[in-house]
Length: 343
Image (tube, rainbow, N blue to C red; front, side, top):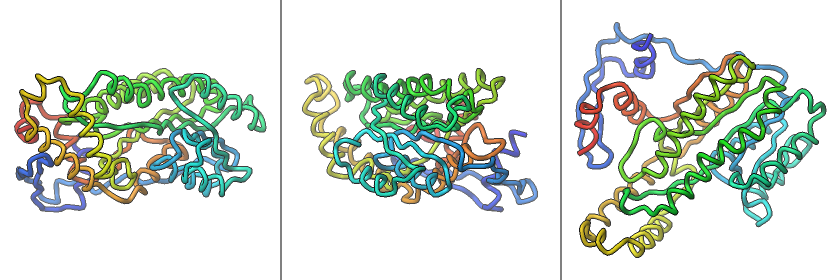
């Protein structure tokens, strides 16, 4: 069973030799694949949808831009009653304006800061009052709101760790707890947007990794608890889509780096040196410009999690390099994966 699952995405690469490339230093390590006779051809299919979609309400957080913005529009086009949670709703953000231009009986933007219990509870009341029959509950919650940062452990302030966790982890927990009564009544869905970095750690990304590892654990616990109640919980683990979401620009990376360097304790600056620091920032710039620009795999995964009669526990919208790296890191002994990727 495990061998079958691991080899499915490789069925399109018969008889090839893959190179596991270390994206940090460019080193490549060949990985030999067997012949096609050992590679099953079965693949996941996105079918068997629940009906009718038009009567189902879904809240998506973090809709100002990125995945949330695209997802809100997509679900609206599919006929869902969409509540698009926007942090910048009251500040004239371009993404909010575009969603508002689509506003109808089936799409509504709402002010939502997932760090604020008060705002979350206000949205709960908005959703409940908008439902035709609140006793039948709300079908879906997509916890998409999140922030990211970079920097090695000694370069990262405690304030940064807390800020990222407050949005990515505690925001997910807070919003889920508030909406669970409505979702339980509908025997609906919770879809949490994690990351490939919620399954495997990466240098210079500890604040983000910590929170996404936490989202994974929270999702698993919730899935166990909700199973007998008919609520299905899925996790979507996107690969590198920074280029598509405009999370970072070269200018923003340099601005973050300057602030980080200026605030470092003198002993850290002295021990590491500016050359080492600048090299790490350059690698981050390369990483941010190398990702996929097409968000449709993520949108399709979330849509399947919301509509399939038997959604998957985890979805992996990522390119083959990151998928293979994730399998190696999560399934092989740490000493082996460290030899391949950590140099």
